[in-house]
Length: 343
Image (cartoon, rainbow, N blue to C red; front, side, top):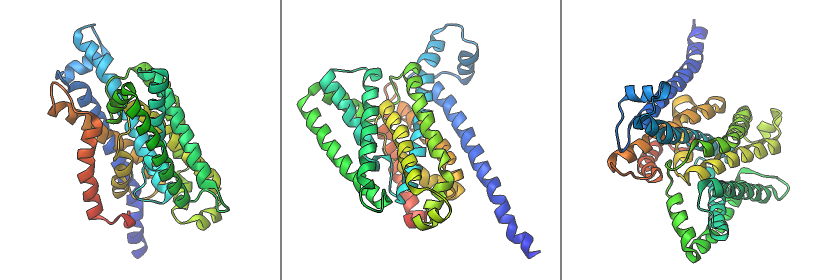
């Protein structure tokens, strides 16, 4: 009798995790519909459905299909990428305050964009997006090589220190460039605030393979991240190849964050806060935490985008600003509820 009672919670836990994932998926679908319907001009949901499945070439159809669907798709993809990258970064560095920016990726993407604008005069997203991605790639490689120096290899502490060093170095270069080039300053000022507007499906499709590869790499090391949480010695005794796991994790973070930042700008708090919130809902097992973060993060991003369009109608407030207003108090609430060391 006692054995059955002891097993009951363990058997119920997977059901709760599945329930949380299903609830997050349903919330995401609802937010997608609201994102398409709400804007400078509110469109009834029945008109949204009609424009999606039986368009007749009206102005509403053009608004839905050409403007709001790409924006919503971008919000979902960027949210998934940032949430997943944040969960991997925190597990890889064993640092509860880690986010993709800790590894220098956001700074690398920013520097790539500023260089492309200042040196080549690129102003279109489809032009400078690849420079942002190359900057993120080079920054990731630099952080990993610096962190891998020494006999112990790329330990979490060394990766974090290398990431901070590269971030400050690239940020200083970026500041120097934007202060000497007005065109680069104007472009960087808009991009650095974070926004889901102004992208088309063609640009999103170009970046989609990088997001998909990054997601597969991240999800593939879920069991290994559980081992890393117990320490390097335990993870090695479980058969995990630590160097390979860390290299795969850094590559996943680079691909996910580099593409997301290039598309929408350096949106903060998503990669930092969402893994903690998801961990409170479904536990620390990365086999569930990673897909959970992929579903919860775009819900926050779309909700922030909708709010930004509502409070400043007929204009809008950029999503990066709204996320900070939403994310800061929510993260403080998480910290007050449970100490970071216990998350």
